[in-house]
Image (cartoon, rainbow, N blue to C red; front, side, top):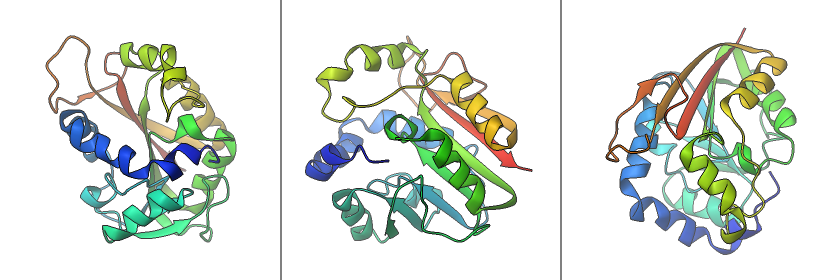
Amino acid sequence: MAKTSAFDKQAAEYDAWFDRHCLFFQAELAALRSIVPATGHGVEIGVGTARFALPLGISIGVEPSPGMAELARQRGLDVREGVAEALPFDDESFDFAIMVTVVCFLDDVNGAFREAWRILKPGGAFVVGFIDRESKLGRIYEQKREQSVFYRDATFYSVNDLVMLLHETGFSDFSYRQTLFPGERTDVTVREGFGDGSFVVIKGHKK
């Protein structure tokens, strides 16, 4: 998770996106809330400014960008500076872990998924939220990537791409949620499955 220079320099601008696009944020949060475990000890990997962690009841996160980590700490989160590929936690420390709009910035997705597996207890859940590359919004992000300060170096993935990688890591028993449907009024509509919504959440379990 080394593609952090833009976030280091413009952490406040990134954080302000959530206020400017409140409906999008609330839809993504609703999709996550519908699938993230309501109980247990959880961690957010790539916690950013804690916009998702806190409303989901997560009190600890990992973040490689000092600027983003500081904003998260100001909101009361326990933030450890580190990368997804080398998490600063012992084996089997958490009941669940989440990773939201982070996979596209990872240097080593396989390594990050293996680390998530390592820190989860047996039966633990791993939740990944992302913009589906094959969705309408995903295609727009891909086409305009060079024009974005934050997404210039991003690599976007499809649902099938990530499920294959998660399965190779050892995760199974997948479930899905989706939101941000093209052609529909932006609200907090969340549906099971994938293929229609631009923002998809995958949950797998460590068996």
